[in-house]
Image 1 (cartoon, rainbow, N blue to C red):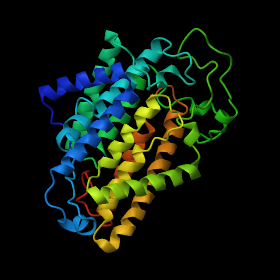
Image 2 (cartoon, helix red, strand yellow; image 1 turned 120 degrees about the vertical axis):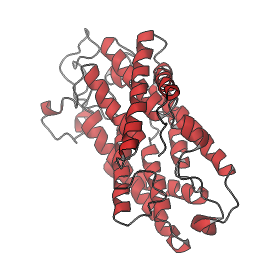
Image 3 (cartoon, helix red, strand yellow; image 1 turned 180 degrees about the vertical axis):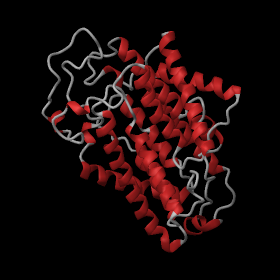
Image 4 (cartoon, rainbow, N blue to C red; image 1 turned 135 degrees about the vertical axis):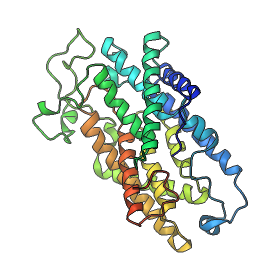
Length: 358
């Protein structure tokens, strides 16, 4: 995946992008990135040559899109202004900073620092925190890409940013896992509404009165349901990729759908971590007409793997912590590494995989 070269302009834009993420809120910023990526990928498709060239074109009658996020999708959607590692990560860090200081929203059911759907306003200190972590995202993504680490650099930057803001603002790095009398993967205390002691009215970050376990998406935390959902999203994403040749279009669409979650439709599933690996896997497995069905099945498998990896991440890094470490970002880091391993093993074609080879 293309990440911006480090220039003074990119550095300045990264700071500004993190400030934007803090101002509008992390989740709205991510949905805006999804919209830009979708528009950019559709625009890129309009500029591709005559249909029918290459194996995908021979079966589906289209030219494959560029296998990197180019144009506005790359320079803005994944770039230093709206890139998830910049604006989204900056907004998440700003929420962690503000949640340490004051109550953001007394109606929010979890720790205030996890409230990433809410715009955080224009207080200079909050904006500067967002800007600092926007710059962090730009630098980390570039370093990861230059080092040739075979994972998604944008998503790894988001994950590392999450750990960094926990350390910077004095939150437990993992959470209160050791205080539980059950498995870290057990979400049943949330079903029983178990809470830590008496309500603590003095500090926003106190444990008193909070749920012992805070599931990321409680409506979508069942393993079997997630596997089925991921399989469906994976097949759909694989089909979108095979008919367009774009490995980023389905990701853009699913990320854009998060706007509805930001608007309060809390039953909406989060699926961009299912769509991206499924799209890449479909194109990496596809060879000719005889492999088209197999490519869709492989995409479905990767969608399911992405869904389950996201749930594993939320149970270990989100549900017991005080701030938002993004489960989809962790999931994409893991699935991108799996894709690189399969390329190294000769199972997948390296061409469509936008990550360094092992």
